[in-house]
Image (cartoon, rainbow, N blue to C red; front, top):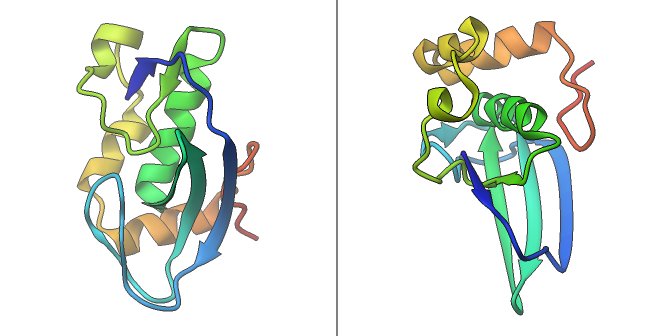
Length: 126
């Protein structure tokens, strides 16, 4: 979820998009189906470039973690792959975040379409 970062990206671009073809989520490995919304983030560091694709479930978790880590020295891993436990860092995980683990990608699309995820750099759904 987080790690102590002493390096910065040389570039960082993120955008909410709609899939035109099947993609694989870089965080959870689930497939992002055509027509589903997801977050595409392009990063560059140490002379390399990479594209990270997060399904709406993982993007929602990423934004939550970024918010709870604000003001700390932890940087949230773009791939959500750090090996840390939520409870050890921030205590009890909110129920709405826990519930995401049990929803299908289609259910997450429908649920999030009802809300607006609109913090800096996130998917904005009208």
